Image (cartoon, rainbow, N blue to C red; front, top):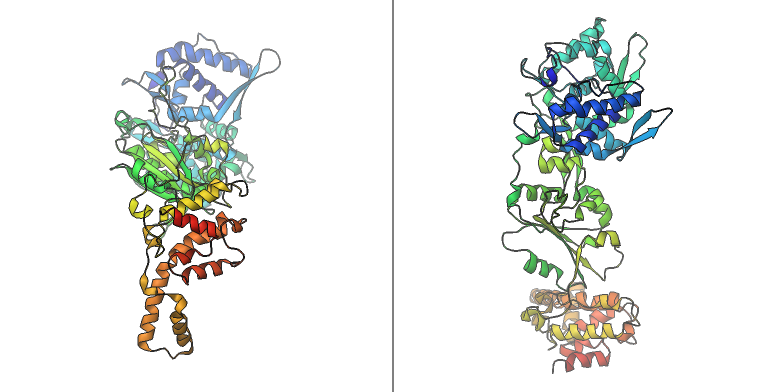
Length: 631
């Protein structure tokens, strides 16, 4: 065993350092001196650190005295990892960096030469407790000589949830478990539980033999509280109220399932098969396409960004869309036996992160349509930070991530568990370089959420020009119903009027009609509608209402109605937009408002006319512009 420590047949946990501040200080020393060898640590580096800690305590520690416990403590907590096959050279691990990032060490002078070390939290209380929980439950005691592979803290938390133990554990009960040679595996949990219940019922005594230091340390960490139980003469320990929330959630998510199932040893990061980063596609980016409705944003994505073989996920933001929908949430799940558990259910963002990370040679695109119709900053939450992309490789302090990866990582254990696996859930989450995010935004949308500058600057903005240069001639030159006016000319003239009246219209440029505002089907004419102004349609409707319509007449009426459904598509989509939105406050610019005061009148006039007369609701100069542009 490292350090020459004797190996006893019991569950041995390191107790030399009880304070989180001291453990943080030791790990910071490793970061400053890494890579470190065990020999240097024992002979010089850790003794100097312990002398500094002893000074803070008001005690002494000679820098000439070897240290045999600092490395063991950091190794037990998985804060360091070995980078050679002999396990003699080590550096800070991912969970170690997460721990360092979670706090800030502050040195506060006190009386005399003493200096007080204290940690300031960089996380919320719940986040800090989740971190401590994850650290503790993944501590496992491995003793190959005795075949032991046991997670004592996971067992402790499960014991404290047992009804028969009433939510507390005594020093004697803990000592009976931790000092026993019988318990080797997590799967002996039921045996351990029953034995401790018997200890309480029989009022057995068991000498702590220093094992109570573990419970005391957890009190200092605010994981446990020391409690008074009237009929006990010794210390009793219960889970701290704030920490209990994290324990309850994680136990519900199945953290303790292995205690009564097959034995599960912890998984070291090196044992997980990782994607080959050398093969990963690069240059992932965030692109936000914006423009007037129908300008061709979605068309541009499909034809310019979604190359053959690209994996695409598409979603739409809306006012009720939330972080839980986008990233994921904890939901109940019922197994075949009817047992309910609570698990993180990933959303589309987490799912595509996982797929992109695990398939480095493939390109992925997440398309977010209508990004400003939802509260984008709230939907992204803390993953908003991931939108900063790495733009170049630094010669100094290069982090090893390829161009297009997130510049900064975030701590989110639920996402990390999905991406990297259980054994690396404390690894910082980043958007991989083979995943791009493309959003679309209509500039004319009203009653939508605004995108602040901090959000927009993380995207490459691209205005989609509103013109017919790249529009399929089948659409651009299609005639609007039976009018002889093409869509290109109608759209161009209306937009010319919009721009020309910018002084009288707010955000006039955004009110233009997009070239793709309509589909080809919206322009097609069904001549079975006939001329509604001849009265035949209205006559047949009246007959139907009074119930004296013949079978043949009913068939004819149905054909007219089907044709009307087709022919209404253009006015209901285009003219309605011009009346209700584009010229809402300036209708007199294009409409004959003297004769037409409502949208109902406008649509009826269009439907009951034929050919060019369908546009008689427009002013004469506007109609003339439609006709003259055709010549």
